[in-house]
Image 1 (cartoon, rainbow, N blue to C red):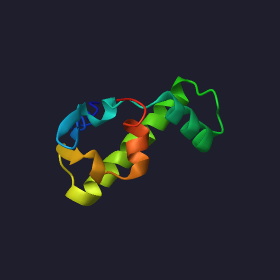
Image 2 (cartoon, one colour):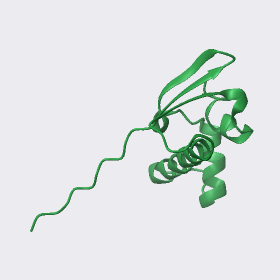
Image 3 (cartoon, rainbow, N blue to C red):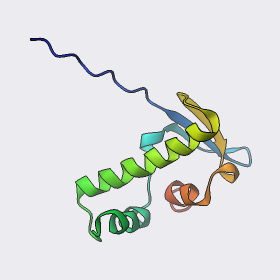
Image 4 (spheres, rainbow, N blue to C red):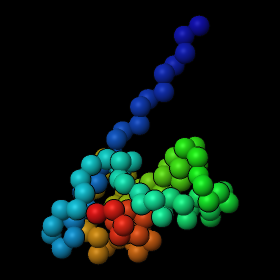
Length: 101
């Protein structure tokens, strides 16, 4: 019996600028998440102040999903987004940009 392969989901990319200066361009799921954010969210989601790899990955996936949902709510589903930091919600800026770039 043959199994159907799942379609690979499209890689969604984002180009983020700050007043016209590029800050990040690449896949959403490769945006760096600060260590403090990872730990704070791990505590919030799992009550785990020393997250293992599984909890770290789950936290990152939830943050990436939150970013992608916000983008899709404004621009619809696309493979590539371009946005300025000043247009982003403060919590998303905190997750990805305040402590990493």
